[in-house]
Image (cartoon, rainbow, N blue to C red; front, side, top):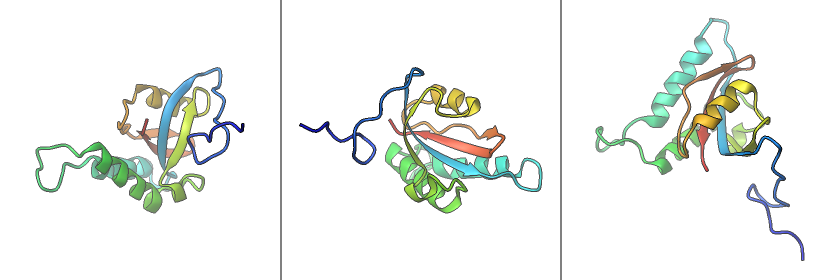
Length: 132
């Protein structure tokens, strides 16, 4: 019998790299602007919007489902990463060694449904959301 479909839309499950599975993540990228720090400020503002409290009760934090929904919408409308933008930032399963060192360090520190602080790499400013 054929192998069961993998978790990211069919096909065989991805083999785990020697770095081990880190989890399932989504990514948002803002390319560096002409003004120093502009991309980091934009990503910080997007993070605030993603994590904003519930509309009906500002004392309650946003629920995980709402965070994932907001992150996906921000990635679709604001991200400049051509690979993940159309998928709402979805990176799928990420293993050690798949990401630049700065992103991997942040990925390892995130709990499920956690959103990273803005991360700066040579490519630009990023946010990560751990979805599983």
